[in-house]
Length: 400
Image (tube, rainbow, N blue to C red; front, side):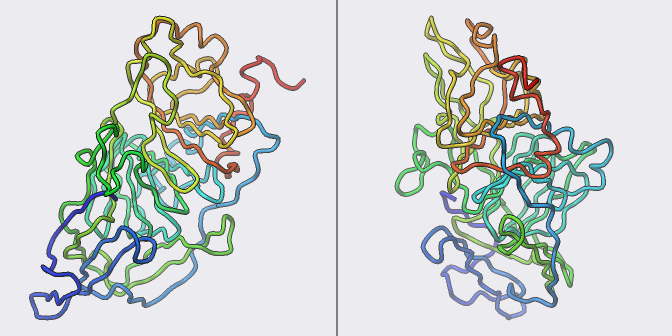
């Protein structure tokens, strides 16, 4: 993270005695990235964070992927994945279904109504986008109240759980990295402050503000970690003697936070602006962008929809959240759709979209894009939700 926060009860000097009311010592834990060479936080526990009383395997949801072969663009209909009232018996962690993935990032989707188990991703950071619904995300650092349009950034190894709120299903789009996820470096000063040209800043980020303490014994934590399963992943359930929400205070620059895409200020121009101006986060070998309601190009001869482009270095994944996405009209794509445009295929507006866009002054569209720099394979949910027709939508006919 890019700036310092302090929450709860901490000693005035790090690595010094911090005593409980009964005279015993709190346990100090350093949670840090890249060994001792990057962002970190110091966390003060009532119990011993290393303590275990049991461990057993956790069978992860299917993490296997199959190649996008033959190489074609695809339309994946995520809203078809969870039928009827099925969501009421599903949680936002164990209920995730893998849509797309490679060695750097995995994209999953869940529609849920149950609280998740305590969960820790020991492989990489997570960026979970809340499409619809609301929830409390309880973490060892404190709680976050999140809702539609929120990105929730959970640093690697943060113990947390999702608790849906309200009567509607919680729809979550989980981007799991094998690395860290952070604001783009070009938005930051060399000391980590957001610069003036950044489309968002520190004021827009919501972190935990008070400690979250819970009682309990023999608590189970579901841990996703490196292993020899599909995608190099495995799962373990750790049983700890005391509830992990035992942190009385912490400070530092590494913690979970939420950012709502409505607080992103779109950058526009006289002619069409390229996708990097819409970037919101980056990870190793992928970026995350969002396309939001905005004033569009105002040159008298401007073409507001994108030009055709060939992703020679990346696969493009667009998740359509709300509004009407002008460039895709006539393709069958709508809310809850994903378009996969793989490297090696030139893509752009559907037939007729260019002419229809001329003279437009405003686009009412909301979409979240992930561009990866290695090819993506299809997870079981990607295969299950493929409409099978999108590749032929530019020509109007497919194989005979």
